Image 1 (cartoon, rainbow, N blue to C red):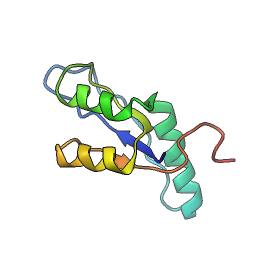
Image 2: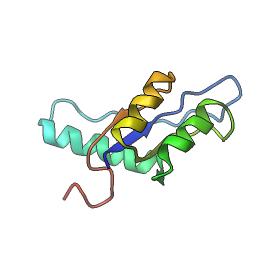
Image 3: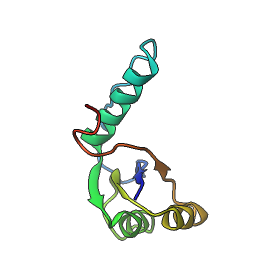
Image 4: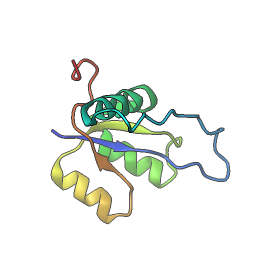
Length: 99
């Protein structure tokens, strides 16, 4: 299944924001892609196949707000988008896939 990512946005009662370094866009595209992927791996909780369920819980404030990553089918991804849940697809979201 394709990987998907949900980056939680800070709300009025959220934990302090985490500083995330922005990759140097002057490098080649593959280096920037690799840097962004490493950043997502380091800063998003892997919820695996429970991605759609967990993204909904976060969106509807039934689970703690946090950034997550995991697998979602095309149908699950589209359903989340239709519900107004901000998610995006990103390939190669497992450690070691970049090498």
